[in-house]
Image 1 (cartoon, helix red, strand yellow):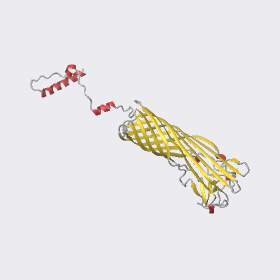
Image 2 (image 1 turned 90 degrees about the horizontal axis):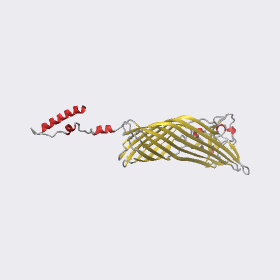
Image 3 (image 1 turned 60 degrees about the vertical axis):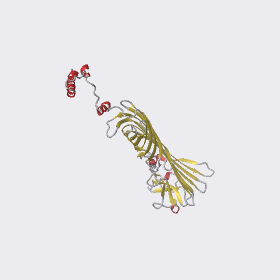
Image 4 (image 1 turned 90 degrees about the vertical axis):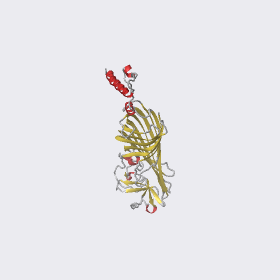
Length: 411
């Protein structure tokens, strides 16, 4: 019935139009619609056809992709006490109180901490999109970076020392590894850091705002930060006696948590430039672990070395392995400028930022207050009954950031 009602006016309108354009008395052939009883099919305007064909909850972008990135990143410097000091020879005497400022920090530099410099790393990602959702997996590693420092002398023109605070009187103490005209020696420090992680995400189409395509991300994240700090003190006396003091601190932070995020893209499907922006935040458990090991060895000519547990910073209540779990947050940001050579190959360069809200690092585990009356390698100890050094969870936040260079293949 609806077809008949619509076909009637159409036939009338067509006939009137034909009559107005044809010579008087001309007989025109009947329209096909009148013969079949159906209306002709009309194509919608292009913009309407595109709106009808686009499903707002269908996945956009490539169906399958893989990318590899080269990372040039920097991490937050590690805070520590003055691990190596130098003192002018004229003021380097064990039985005199040093004037303020006489002991100058040599490593790490004042107010800077241990700066590892630029890390090299790699990151890889693979993904696939289905009709209503996508899956992706990614992993990265910053290769281990080591920072070394050492200072040795015979006491001239400067003496070399480690530093701590006496538990007996609260005064800063300079433990000399060399003194002019008395003995030679020095202090060496080695520290390293490595960071890596894995993640898996489900991609879901999301409302677009100022982007060509936007996906929501829901998944799981793992981050692993491992660092070590080793301090060695060596003093050699004219009699042949040798003092060796070793402190080794190892820390590990393992984050496990769920994450959500957003990925927005402008362009990036055809040849030309585009932008790719990803932001993620994860909440979960940070498994923190610290291990402190120390020893001191006295060697005399013709006598077997005498080895005792406990160094300068790792001794007494500060020795051993300490573990705990703590709620923590991880934030990740990636901003890339992309260029497509064609629809399946893309290169990009951008900025990456990774933030961990709570980590334990070797430098922060050091308790600078020490009861030196319980040590055998300090010449003039101060009487005290304090059980120092002790272990405490002196945590800090951590960041890694830098430049990313990448290649992406997509289909």
